[in-house]
Image (cartoon, rainbow, N blue to C red; front, side):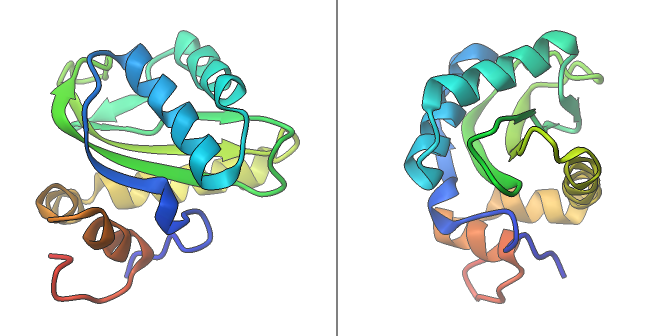
Length: 155
């Protein structure tokens, strides 16, 4: 069972997000981090953009895991968005991205940051799980899937 309760707040999940570009998406993730966790939107966006400059976090199959670090958080937090239309993300397989699970970690969270990335990556690579996320009818259903809460609307 998937359980991202330690990373995600219900307010940090969105579906049907429209983004015209990777840059636009990263800005929206910054705004979502501000809404859900009270973080500085511009700072989060800057951290995500800086990481993307090192290489795309689009790892294939329409999935990206942008991530960054800031001293504004005490623990790793997540943001999840399902896009209304896939966008070019420079992914390793050149496929456009529609599922995005972003992570924001404390600056000094080396091993914990890597463990969170590995956890998210393992789950997102599961084709059945990705299909369920793509088929979820609402942000509540998305959160239920991500949090491991069983609900009849989640699948």
